[in-house]
Amino acid sequence: MRATRLALLAAGLALAAGCGGGSGALPKPGYALPYEITPATGNPVSRYIKHVVVIIQENRSFENFFAGYPGADAPLNGFKIGKHGVRFHIPLHEVTFDGPDFPHNWHASMVDWDNGKMDGFASIAANTAPSGARDPAYAYVKRSLIAPYWTMAREYVLADRMFPTEFGGSFTAHLTLVAGTDNIRPHKAIVNFSDGKYDDCDDAPGTRTQTLNVYRVVSGFTGPFPCFTQFRTIADTLDAAGIRWKYYAIARLHAGAWEPFEAIKYVRYGPDWSKDIIAPQTKILTDPREGRLAPVTWVSPSRIDSDHPAVKSPLGPPWVASVVNAVGESRYWKSSAIVILWDDWGGWYDNAPPPQLDFRGLGIRVPCLIVSPYAKRGYVSHTQYEYGSILKFIEQAFDLPALGPTSEGYTDTRANSIVDGFDFTQAPRAFKPIPIPPGYAERIRTEAPSDEPVDTE
Image (tube, rainbow, N blue to C red; front, side, top):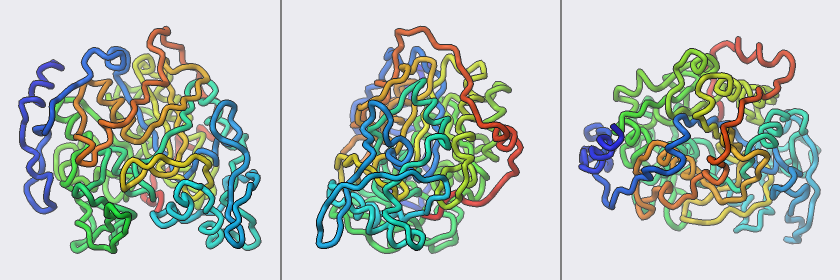
């Protein structure tokens, strides 16, 4: 069956002619690749992993959650530029989930990054910090409040080199998590947000996007309507191979940037829309137990469960633990890999200069956890990852070709797979439920549906 599917891919199904315009016919699943198809047939990932679950949280840097973690690149101090351009050390301080919400668009990331010196966080944060707050971005969340994350790191894998594909905020982060690119031309990419309400195909006519050119100049709202046909996504590949996938979101319609397939024309107006976009997101808590976990799954949270600083809610860690427990306590555990990451840094300090691989980034580092019966126990992975690394791992698990070449902006070809976090020579470990603070599990399980977008930047 797999060989047949790959033959169909290789033979072309050259039906993705819609990749170039926003108003033409819908792209069809499958496509003719402009280079040799080299699926990873027989690799150990495809022998052991049959289910990949990607849990996406909001707006935290690696340092903000894992400063001081043993063996990780996460010192408890950072660098700041003071008056007259003097650069000096500054200790990180402890905060709760009541911390402020900092700007996290393209401009903010450029200031924070400061050409790799990672010392500009104070100047951006000062504009939105509470009155009297000193160096608010140089902070880490109290460990007892994020205990489920530290438990998963100690039991499984913490990756301390995960970088977003692009500098900036949530819209492009979520697009690149499913496409590995957001290029609309070889030297022009989507950046920031649209000027519409939803950032997707259901926005009002005339909605436009911002764009970024190869010189890192952001253009105003002159880009295409946010119903993209200019690049492929992993949905094309999975559909062409007959592999089921699901994306769990707060709502099927108008979930905003945190349900990126609503901005992909092929999905929004194709059969995937009614069968693969699952709402509300809390169905992920019962679907594994009921035998309905798809081979590839993405999970986005409600606003209150998202870790977003503006919400000031402690429910993010128990929400993630609940999702992990739902998979871990199901019959799917022995063939699963769960990846947990945050869509962008949220303006919080981070010490690791992101490697610059193209004009889009890489962006400022975010936390990443890998949970699996084959995950190395208590391992800190220092391998350089990007969002394309997750796509590459999915492609390895199902013997699929890459989405496209690096020359066209796709990143799954160049990226390191997250396979470094796995040991397939070990027997699959039995699952131990992630502890959740008393009262939180029931609160999350009975959470009322919400249509409030997780973020607006």
